[in-house]
Length: 227
Image 1 (cartoon, rainbow, N blue to C red):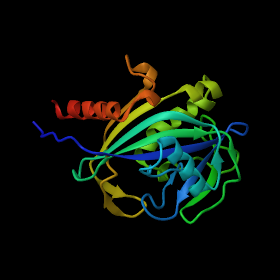
Image 2 (image 1 turned 60 degrees about the vertical axis):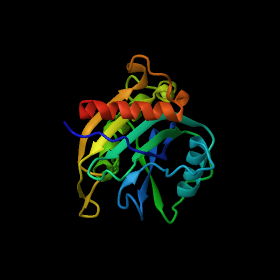
Image 3 (image 1 turned 90 degrees about the vertical axis):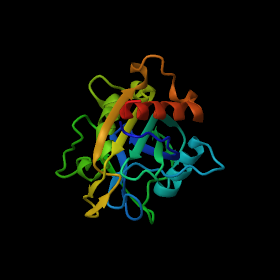
Image 4 (image 1 turned 45 degrees about the vertical axis):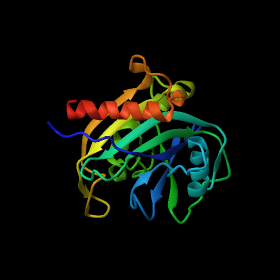
């Protein structure tokens, strides 16, 4: 039986700006640092002196030059690099934003670009599909589901805003296609996804305190270790 050791978590945010009228999503091309060469939403580490929501608003302003005025909370990603036991689990809190002040602008870290968010993620111009091949592996799993909740045949804005997810992913290490180097945050192994309303007894995630999130992810890890 594999050994089991509890692991620390590190708080992050991830914000996906949505243009509801034109059915578009704003993604950022990472120009430097962790995730360089990939497309993603906007976000980063939550500072010690701020709430998760405050951290999300700050990161959006720093990376995309817009100030979100109506963020909707959509859940938590727990990302675990099992190839390096010294690394914390990344606990990433996901938001969308549909109203903001200012206009998206390029920064030293991110280049913002609009992409169609219709169910097939394509538009009328060749090459303007969402660049899933240049996104993190777990994002390719959950982002289409969230966009479908907003823009799909059976979706809608109010329906989309109510959706909350939990996604626990482990990585075994693989080559990062953007750098050509071995990377412990690649090589997806376990991939557990659930909409909150589909898991019996699970409360809305904004009610989860730090200890509740710790209990949930440790419970998932123990199941994987067979304990």
